[in-house]
Length: 75
Image (cartoon, rainbow, N blue to C red; front, side):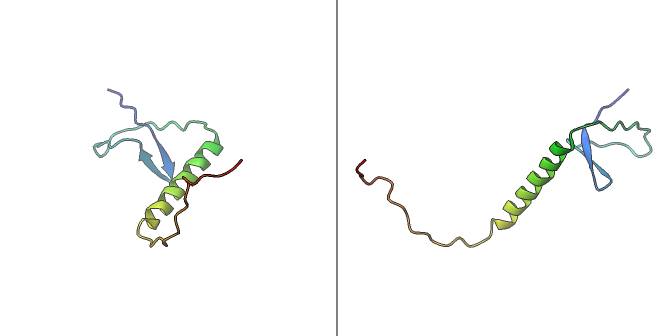
């Protein structure tokens, strides 16, 4: 039986897109796909953005004055 697992390599380690339990000492064939490096770079940038967002969740936010967006104005 063949099992195909999609994922990517980060710092020499394979990260699968889904949780998979593979028994020890199973033979495997790894195929490296040619992909646009720009897409890979964007993925890394997105992960960094999400990491920074997670870190900022506990930051104190200053109380800014509210804008009155329902006021009348002349054109």
